[in-house]
Image 1: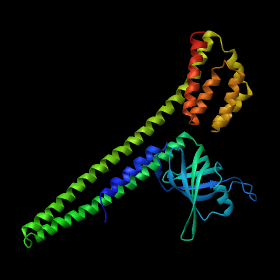
Image 2 (image 1 turned 45 degrees about the horizontal axis):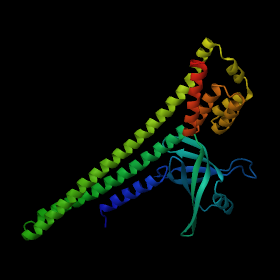
Image 3 (image 1 turned 30 degrees about the vertical axis):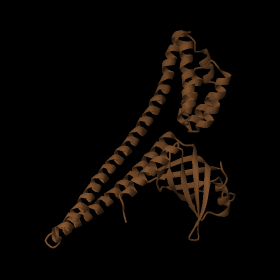
Image 4 (image 1 turned 60 degrees about the horizontal axis):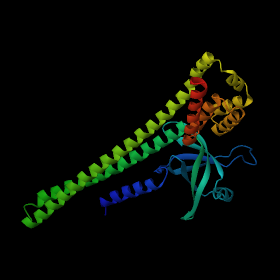
Length: 323
């Protein structure tokens, strides 16, 4: 028999489990293609289809049914690299990213072998991650609202039936039974009011989460825009103070060209490596610190990027503003 306390227990478990993890896991079923590398015969990446069970800011969990023994062994290797293609329905968008296997559970259900696999993101575009999480939040929001609406409809039908029974039996039953029926109707009405309030609270929480994600996305865009625009500001300052010799030398350096090429191809980890070597060769450079901070922000290494960006601003003040 349905009880309203079931909803409270479910929401409490979800909130408690969310507080223990770094990222909130959002249940969702989305088509995913996965590959462990090039096949021996074809020489190309062999992708197989599966579905997600949940999505978070740090990775996804997938369910693979009746996987061959070779793939089963690959799933059980912790840290094994895996290529993913995640399809977002209704948007016709395919997200390409790289991950590593974090955990694996094998289950047998009705003569069917299932692999539950947890994957953490290693390389993924920040905008793709925001689109993926936005879709997952919208999906669970629709499901929750649909369930609450269905419960509300069922309860409304029950209350209407109780009220109809009260009106039909009012002339046939004694006053004591009439009072009991009235109390039942009052209790149901209170439960409906409580359910509506919980639904509104849940909707407010979902909207707040969406707003927080938009603010985070806007902050990343503003930092990138500042880093992109700062190079033009610095060029004017260099001309005024005549200190562009080191920067001119860097522009023609092979590490700079390789780093920019890797950044344009969204291979942020390779770009970070080139820019770190660039700073080692030219420790007094400003451009190297700016490019390194930009690559770290793009790779979602926020803490390290903030430290490099702070050092970058200190060097501007020391070399340009107060030489």
